[in-house]
Image (cartoon, rainbow, N blue to C red):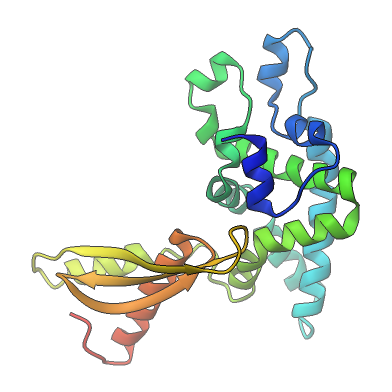
Length: 233
């Protein structure tokens, strides 16, 4: 994954490309190159602050009747390591991070902390390159679905696993497939549409900003049909 690919996926073109390269440089890479490169820790610092501000502002607008405590808890979920790791891996940021040999050999590109830190650094790089409004647009494009799920209290609910467990309890041999039907919208902010096939029969559909979230939406819809007493399997 090249830095240019990350630009395409976040929908932002850097005036100073070196900022993005720095955002994607882990401290282990800097150490192995005798300090010839700057690592992403400073950009991570500013990105963390901008991220808190942007998400806080958005929640303030969307959660109009909620007290400070609810806003604080929701923001914490949105900006936590887990959600940033998921977002970073969906964008391929983890594949673009420059790691030292040792860190790379121990699976650094899959470590949630490294991916989450790089995401904050990317947001920081956008802020330093294009200002607050550019950073705000990129952050909301990246995390809009995460914010919506967090507000509804559904951010880390694994509907796919729950649906599979419900099917398995029936005690019959089943084949569950999540099939992508279409993708519409711009490449950096499009929507996937999928359906669930159970033993070759379509039982539910869903959509989302990634294949993973679309699959979760389809599984959620299948579970809701079950709760309503509708035939699914």
